[in-house]
Length: 238
Image (tube, rainbow, N blue to C red; front, side):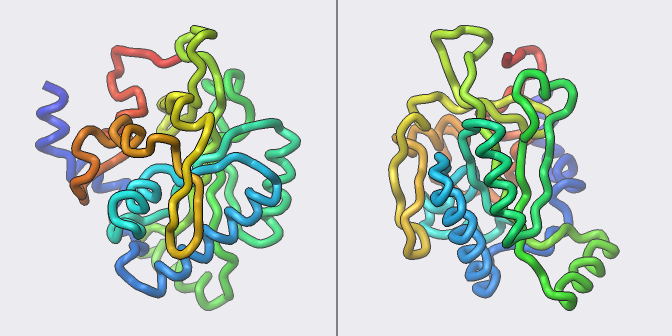
């Protein structure tokens, strides 16, 4: 069956997307750079009074390990969409300090959600680091680490207006978090700074990673394993 096939060939299925990442958090220098990038991005978000939280593997690492997961290759944040005006203001401020790439919704999802799906944020680099990164890309390696800022939209789940959830889209799949986790936030101390995390975070981690979220797994891929996404092609999230 499909699950057995995925389990058997998972490393092959992930080989293209997670192959040759030049970034991870084994190197203390990269941890320091990532910590600074995270803190500076959150400074901007907080100055604009936007609601954010540590998302994905960054939240998992903060709660479970008290640090970035060593084999992770990016930083994850979530943010609530409030208005196009606030999003444009955020983008303006981010562009002043960082390299950013805006991933917009495909036609399939644009009408339902709007313009912005994900903002990829990276350090401004000097000419030496830009050349180094281009050489790595030419050799087939992925770019240096980035911060993925996922945009979440509060909408009815499957058109049930009594059941509002926070939706996002990744790999063209709609996922969601229950509002009980994001209507209010908790705090966590992470690299000497307090950050927002979902309310009742251990329950939230279970919804995303399963009951065994507390056990590290190096082979994990959002497209195959993230339980907040629609992983069953026979079912639809609207």
